[in-house]
Length: 280
Image 1 (cartoon, rainbow, N blue to C red):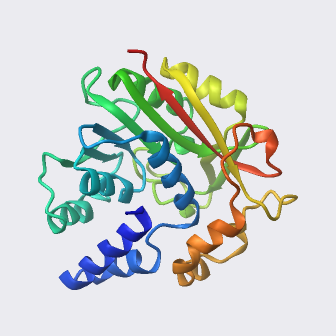
Image 2: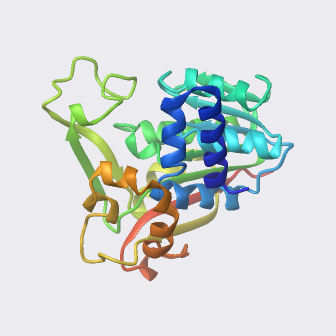
Image 3: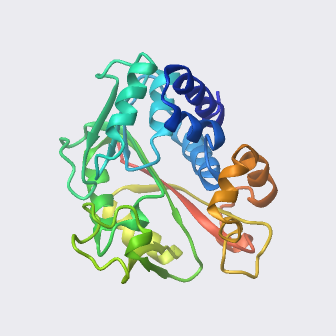
C-alpha cells in the first residue's frame, strides 16, 4: 500500500469515528505535493522490515504510522513540540497499534534521550534544514550515535547548487514559539526559516558530523519553471493547493523529475536524499 492510499484510509476511519477536523485534512490532502516524493525516496531507500526499530525525527507523522501498521515495525514518532501527540495517540488506538509498537513522544533531535545504538533505522523528512545555528549538525551527530552498527539513516532536505538561507516573518512560522524559536520574538521581524543545502553543505553540515558512511545521494527537481527560483507550489495559493489535494499525485508526476545521482543532471534541483550507514 502506498502512503497516499494509506492516508485516504486514515481519513475515512477518522470520519467514521467523528474526528471531522483531521478526517477532512487526510481526505483532501492525504500526502502533499513534495512529501509524495520524499516519502517515496525514504521508503524505497530505507528497505524497512517488520523486525526494524525505527526512529522518526520530526517528519510528517503519516510515514511513521504507515510503517508501524503495514510492516509491523516498532516505530518511534518524535518531534520537538507536542502538537502531534493527541492526534497520533488517537490514531494509534484507531489503527489498533499497541503503544510498545508505535511510540509517540517529544524529543529534541539535537539531544536525544535514547541510548547508543538503540535503532537500526532512523529517518527525518524535511526537518534538519529548519534547525537554526549548528543544530542540524548536532542532530546528525545524534543520529549517528543512536544508530546501531549496520543501521541506516535517511534524510531529505532542500537543495540548491549554491547555499541559501531563507528568512520569514515570525508570524508565518508555526514553531516560532517552540523549542526551535525564541520565545517573545516580535512576530513582525524576519527570522530564520530554513537553509537550502549545497553539495558542500550536505557533506560539511550533515554527512561528516554524523560519523556515518555515505551510501547514496540522490537529487530531485522540477521539470518546469526551471529559470525561476520559486517552486511550482509557491505560485499557487495555499487554499488552492488544498482544494486540488487529490490531484497532488498527478501534479507530482507532471512536475517532479526522476531521482538523479548528480544534481548537475537536473535543470532545477530542489531536494536531496542522503542515505547513510553505520559500519558493522
